[in-house]
Length: 597
View 1 (cartoon, one colour):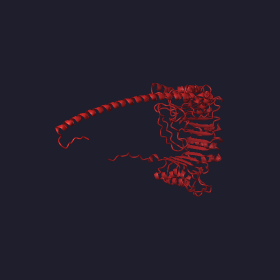
View 2 (cartoon, helix red, strand yellow; view 1 turned 30 degrees about the vertical axis):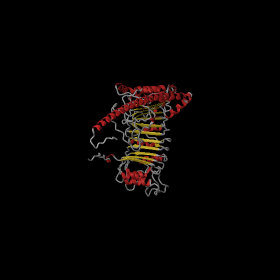
View 3 (spheres, helix red, strand yellow; view 1 turned 135 degrees about the vertical axis):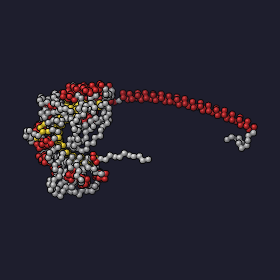
View 4 (cartoon, helix red, strand yellow; view 1 turned 90 degrees about the vertical axis):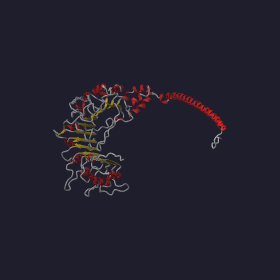
């Protein structure tokens, strides 16, 4: 602290002494400031030098790490593996990932040379592409597969909405049995050749049909091939893609073992499919499917439409799938040793029921049969009884005349039955007679969508769901466009005059667009309470048939009746999995949120 006395006025001597001290302090402060500045400059230089030294050491470290990686790679045991062991490792990857050859060939030159010498690694073509992409990918794939290895081909062509005018054919609405074109998902390992990642659409189809994956669904681990940007060159490729691609593919037709070609809508060069014709001695599975009907249906000189062929043209063919494309019932491709047939005709395609039965009867080894014809004509020739002892899955849909086909079939091994027919009269008797002729087959899955008339019988007459009484093995039941209350009443507690539950082993019930008549909610609660009593309690609804029914594990109700939050919450306390959506007319739009000042 200063020794100056500030209480009294300073004398002249004190003022002089203060001026001397002020000068001395200012000089000292200036010297300290210069020393601080010099120290800061030294520190900054030291930091700069240190950072430069650290950067140099870091660079040297990265070089050493790179050398270490190269050295480790050089001394790695896998580099000393013989080629035959490497091939064996590649084969193990090939079984799970058919497109792994592209990845392995990009690892190093050694692996690339080795993979290119293994034609079978390139024998499974899995490609998701567009008309704007180069078809040379197919050519390169086929060239690398060699000249003799059997080919397993799966190609999905995603056609842009603007490339072809959309067909005016009516959109296929949901129905439990068939609904839209059913496509399994073989493209989970595929080279994707799309112009840009596409957002999967919301796909809420309800029960009955397992919702097919979005046609351009791309898993995150699939390699994405670069594609051309839209241009005049892309337009030329678009108009000729089918002709170029089919030329490459049909040149190797003698090596086809599986051929699956799917596209979501008509494309410019669709006429190239007509060139699919000739001998395919190795072909076991053939599928060409479109997700919507073609705009025209001329006669095509391709394999499903030819009427004459050499006996050895398709000796190994076991599975045929043709959806929304021309075909002829007399084609040699539709017999005689097929195990799976899936036919979905064009809307203007006409065929007679007796010809369909001829196709079915010509393949006694059938295990799966799916027929959906929108313009089936009554039989001209008498329908002969036909037994298919190995058939396990049957799907029938389309025109009401096709239901007559069921009256001629006997299916002792049937496990899955799907009906999507618009009948002129009740099909209860048809289904009952089919099950009786088949000696009560072990049916596990049943899917129905048609208007039973009448839905209710007066005077205590027969119940329209009586044909379900003997289906003790049924585990999954899917119903569409029928009475909501009638099916729930049938599945609830048996009446006093009944001695057994209907479908006692049912675990999955799916309903969509089933029209209610007032007491649907009460019937639903009764059915759930009787089949799924509260946890920890026993089911008191026993019958003389023995035991209690199996608990429902999955309940799906789509666009049938509004339930309310309380009912829905109660149902979810009884059933493990519940999926529900209200009818369209019952959905009230939510009001926007308002901000109050």
